[in-house]
Image 1 (cartoon, rainbow, N blue to C red):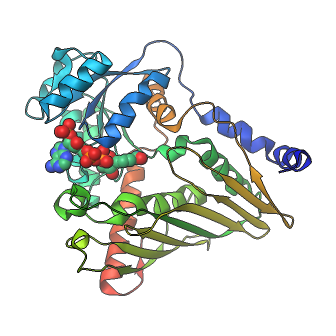
Image 2 (cartoon, protein in one colour; image 1 turned 30 degrees about the vertical axis):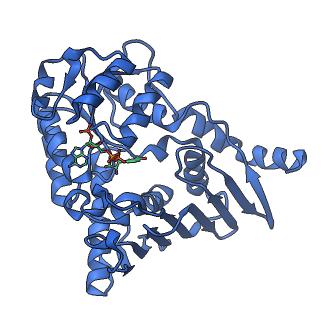
Image 3 (tube, rainbow, N blue to C red; image 1 turned 90 degrees about the vertical axis):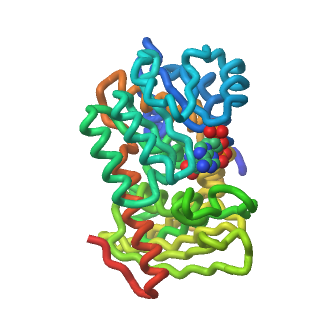
Length: 363
Ligand code: NDP
């Protein structure tokens, strides 16, 4: 990009950039909030490494069904044996004052059980996406945290990622005119022999895992909940990966303002993008929801330009510190349990639409 072009677009985006930077982390300095990680799989391993970037959060306890991992990660992160738990003795965490938050990073079908147990142990809960495997479970989790007077946040990390924050702000301000259409595609090639491909543990296929990024993006880019859902599923049942879960599911959402979203969710092809099309142009992110490397292009006034955004802090650390700040300040998380519930309502409608071959209306 020419320097002159970059200056032009940055000048036009000044307000948006300021918002993105200011929402990255608003926690006060001081005491650090202690996290216990439950389930030491691949994503947990990444999360554990991100505490080093945090200002308000620290790793203080581990919960695992694999003793070797408790030893390995305990030694790596300086977690004493007294702060390492098995699933069987997880409830003893109530007696550990160092633990403020239990972060659930287990297979989807275990999210509800460990969220409820953590709330009953008097701990705040961060739970990975998808929040659970049904609307009913989401409601139970919200009720349990409310009854215990504890906060619940869902791991929608993109809300703490500066390019996504800027896209939300620009869409809200009508930078390319009022939004008319959103396209959102997410997918990857699923490896065989894992819990994700077993409905008992995952609750569903690509939609529960990766397509949820398409859905969640349409909701945060519009600030609305869809009122109509149409979906079609394409799954090769002779592929052993897809004996119990879906591969590809494409869905069309209609929002109250008239915005339409067309979305792809796939376990057999790679996608990671969205485009917000307004009456005067479009805003595109590709990759949109990856761990890093976001790239933005904007088309406005007949010109298409790349836009770079400062990334002062990674999205994972931003997410951990945001929840810590909520606990320290007594404020509500940006992505509470109700956000996970809202996605799950639409997910259930998408599955129903595909199954019954008809449009589903959401109240
Ligand atoms: P992994 O399979 O890598 O890890 C899951 C861990 O859960 C296992 O290593 C195991 O840890 C524990 N576990 C307990 N019971 C079971 C069981 N019955 N089957 C398998 N594992 C079990 O999964 P991921 O880390 O990829 O995913 C975990 C969660 O995180 C999912 O909900 C997923 O959707 C979410 N996720 C979110 C991402 C994001 O970007 N927000 C990215 C990736 C995942 P142990 O041996 O310690 O008991």
